[in-house]
Length: 79
Image 1 (tube, one colour):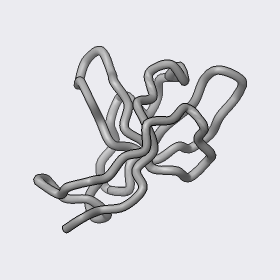
Image 2 (tube, rainbow, N blue to C red):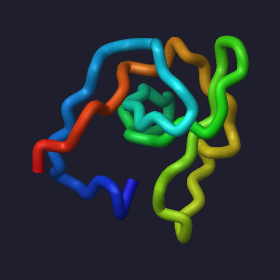
Image 3 (spheres, one colour):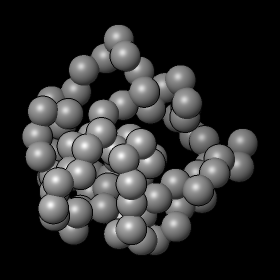
């Protein structure tokens, strides 16, 4: 999620499934474990995600994810 969040940043996350488009979320993926990404779109029980670094494309951006994989919404960064 560079440049918004950097490695070793401390994030405060609200454990919820109530998310909106453009929210930053923490979610569990099969290949990468826990990831911090931005919600691109929501349709029913599924969502698409993307990162803030426009020069990097991840294969997980092309996959539709289930809302059940969402751990929570990032509320703020401590430092």
